Length: 144
Image (cartoon, rainbow, N blue to C red; front, side):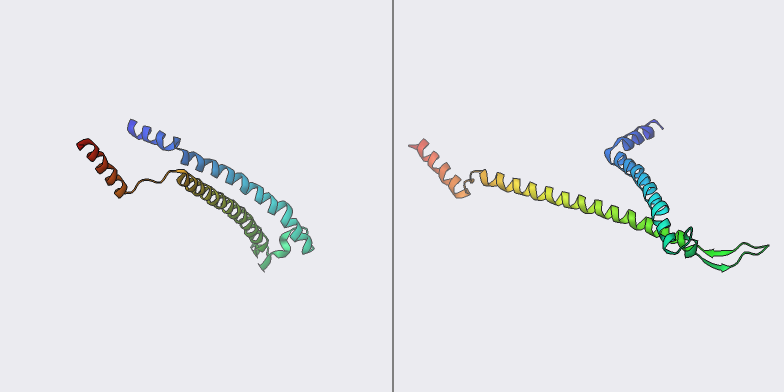
């Protein structure tokens, strides 16, 4: 059991897990922001466009309420809100990923440029033929 706990501690303390946890927390907070944007800004604008105090104008009543049964309503207003919520989050995530990919691409180009500059500064290495000729010359000097 102790080995299991130690392994779990290692797993939790790794950077990737911590980054993921932070991402989940920030994602939850961002979800709350987009939910508020949709519920408090977009939905009232839609209600204004449909001349209704709320998005009930977007709902479709399939069966009216009776004394014994509740109404059956297609909640299109709520659905539109959820779709807008998703689209806003997807747009932001797409933008973040695009920016991260661009940054990674720029970093890769910079690294490649630095490697090319370092290569250009290195003196050319002698060929095998040049090395063998130098060794032969050294051997001739020792024999003489």
